[in-house]
Amino acid sequence: MAKVQVYTQEGKKTTTLELADSVFGIEPNANAMHLAVVSYLAAQRQGTQSTLTRSEVSGGGKKPWRQKGTGRARQGSTRSPQWTHGGIALGPKPRKYKVDLNKKVRRLAMKSALSSKVASEEMMVVDKIELAEIKTKAIVEMLAKLEAAKKVLIVTENADEKIYKSARNIEGVKVATVNTINVYDILNCDSFIVLEDAAKKIEEVYA
Image 1: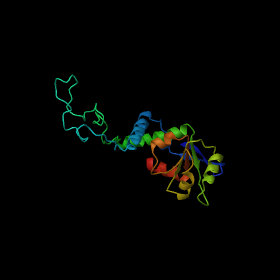
Image 2 (image 1 turned 60 degrees about the vertical axis):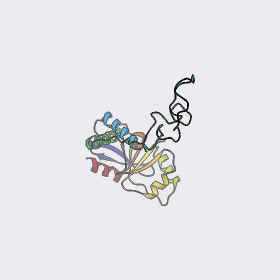
Image 3 (image 1 turned 135 degrees about the vertical axis):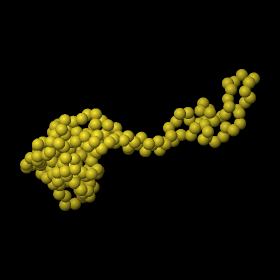
Image 4 (image 1 turned 90 degrees about the vertical axis):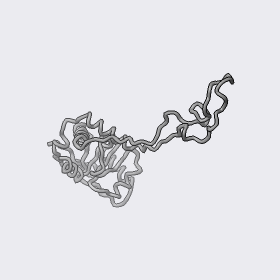
């Protein structure tokens, strides 16, 4: 069983939490994680960029000058790509950048990302985060006591408005729930802070 230290909100060590090796203790598969990151980043692209080709720009109906005898290069339209106000040659058009991954690869990538954080000792389990009100200072103080790095991912079991709104203005800090975490965010953070109930939920989902 993979063991992770459990901390309080004040940064004090309490107990250790045993997590399933099938989720948090496998040999990380770099290829699966790479595919998951590529798929995630591709999905962030809108693919709405569009340029006008020579057939779509207005004007250019008349031949600029006769074909022969002028001493100039032959031209058929003032809307050819080489002309000012002409169409764009080989420009981008709306498209989908989606990269499909099968379920087994997605699960393997997630388990690999979680296991890599445990192996590198970048995962911290916090028993609970209790906030009396929405206050950024409270999260800043908690992260300082936990000696968290600059890039932090905080994972809660369910959406918590107080935690989310308190942390959203802190640079480098992101809050996610068990059902919204992804491989890219896990690998991109330097401190992976998971609430105890969220860690058990992740284990339950991916075991």
